[in-house]
Image (cartoon, rainbow over all chains, first blue to last red; front, top):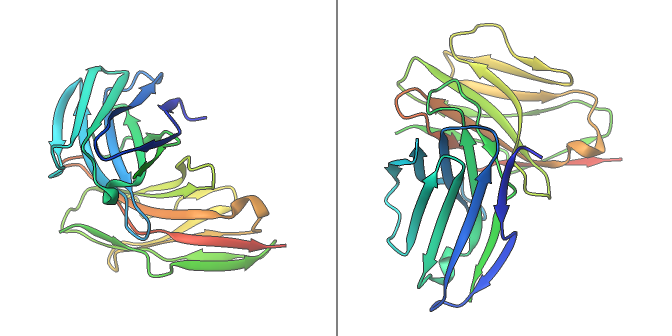
Length: 114
Length: 114
């Protein structure tokens, strides 16, 4: 257990549905991240938040909408997704954005779009 | 562009033997941090070992050690006395100070034979 909790663990949704992924960290970290992990591909950074402010949007389609109400919580709102969006979505946090800070990961949400 | 390359999609080792996983990276930065993460079937990404680029001494953590060749931009992971619990996906990752984002390789799937 790394202190980063993601819910739900599994999610199946239709292309017209709206759902949200939740990430919570109890480590007192200031930076939080969303990554997408697809088969046969490296982890792709999606969004970065630092002190609740978005610092990076890695050209992610607008059907993915992040929200960071405070430094402990991060959401990923999903709507009108495509089957190719099926993947493991990982949340991570770190004390800060600096190079020498360790990132702690949650167990991910396995998303299937049907 | 910063990239991380893991040339071995799959590796296999006999229990109690030693195995080395390869990783190369490409960067023009002088200040960066290198990591090996382990992802077991539980999907939790767990930090195995890390190496600061400015340190010449190779990092070690119990049975895990790295061979860091800065000039060659190589960062291999050696697992000694392999155990069944070491079976997992292993990801090499790189982090710079400019943005602090983690860049991952595609991973190496390690199997441990009893």
